[in-house]
Amino acid sequence: MTTISANLQSIHARIDKACRQAHRDSGFVALLAVSKTFGVEAVEQAHVAGQTAFGENYVQEAVVKIHALRHLALQWHCIGPIQSNKTRVVAESFDWVHTVDRIKIAQRLSDQRPANLPPLQVCIQVNVDGGPTKSGVAPDAALALATAVAAMPGLCLRGIMCIPDDTPDLIALSSVMTGAREVFVRMQLAGLAVDTLSMGMSADLETAIACGSTLVRVGSAIFGGRARGPIDPLALA
Ligand SMILES: *Cc1c(COP(=O)(O)O)cnc(C)c1O
Image (cartoon, rainbow, N blue to C red; front, side, top):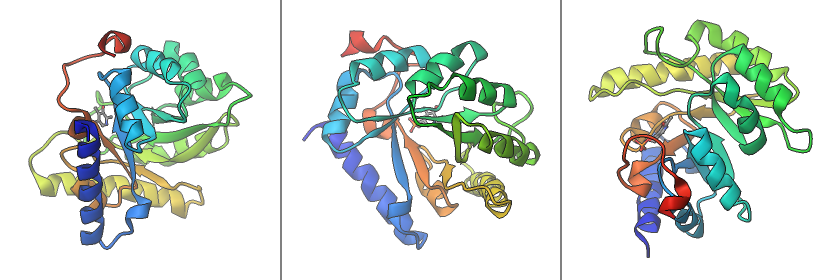
């Protein structure tokens, strides 16, 4: 067994345990394997171990991997910030985007989504705890943005994502994650068909599941520690 497949097993065990403790069905918590900075070989190993959904932050790096692995039935999620000049390649290459936080980016992604592909699956990134410099729409503005996204033909609104600031304070973390859940529930109450609350990473997936996460994004606990910044994925393969 490879390290990656052993790591995937232990992540599934952590998810199952967290779900039992939260009295939730683990069938409602999906695992996104965050493969940023790792090469195609690492993704292939995870795929052999049964993982099909992968998250990437850096568009250029991701596109090389997506192309190299196009023979596999993988689902690719963009979880990094998106600049206007990258929307076309994102719309053409990914299945999901978790980081839509303004109408202009949403509109470009919808307009640029190729007609032969299904709509791009979208989460609105919500900034629950950060100041104005942090990515994500303010909680108060999230419902309006989600409503606009839901009406765009190239997009399919799925829910929200959040990236809480790093903190060792579990109570503070829980309150941020509960705040995200409240935004999500408000969308449901407003009649939007959302099913995805994307939150939780290697270090905090248990807290996220306790707070209602339906999708955890796990990188280092599957693939190992990373160097900072994007890499050339084929050079590492
Ligand atoms: C890198 C990253 C992750 C994975 O983080 P780990 O701590 O390695 O599990 C999850 N979500 C986002 C948005 C990321 O950028």
